[in-house]
Image 1 (cartoon, one colour):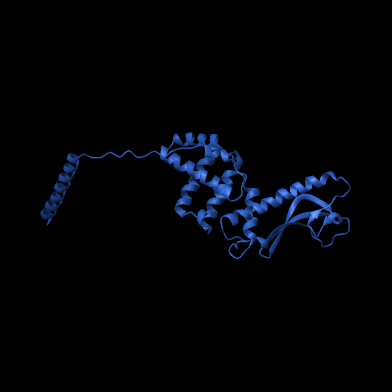
Image 2: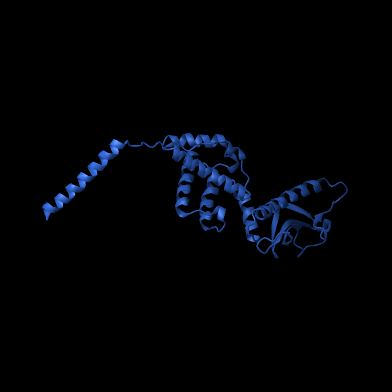
Length: 257
């Protein structure tokens, strides 16, 4: 296996767990996922999941039937597997991009997955985080952050200050935002603001936040500038005028002197 900045995949584990302390035999216990990265570990509680302690296979870290054809076992295993895959997905993103990661990075990624529901709230925090990060693809300058924060405020105003789940941001909504901006700014500025929103949807996806990929279907082009070239006669006249102004400046100086 390929080492990832000193950590290998073999050092990463996501396993079912419960707290053995002060547990009586047969008692229902709260279930956790134990996240282990490079020797450090953190139990993460699985909400509302409890199981009898004596029906937990500790050696294989799995649940056993409470009775024959237990109907809840399949459901519980599906929930556990879904949560486990979420953490493994975060790990695999780091591995694919050959990026250094720690237990805190995995937990932060999972936290973004849970909390990254409202777009404007997510973008506001992400603008702050990207000024501090050391990840090359995520880093932004202060001047860029100010422009992007301005876009976020404009998008919030477009939504009439009612934030939307990030999965609701699609091509139709971006088109509406573009039309809203066109009432106030030029087409190139509209292009820039739309690109800001798109970049944070892409940023969200890189950080394991569920998005609606339909947003990519809205394409807007930057207008090319249409320069007006001066003719040779006009250039000569401008040069002559410039020389006259220099002579006048020298003459005024001599008079004053």
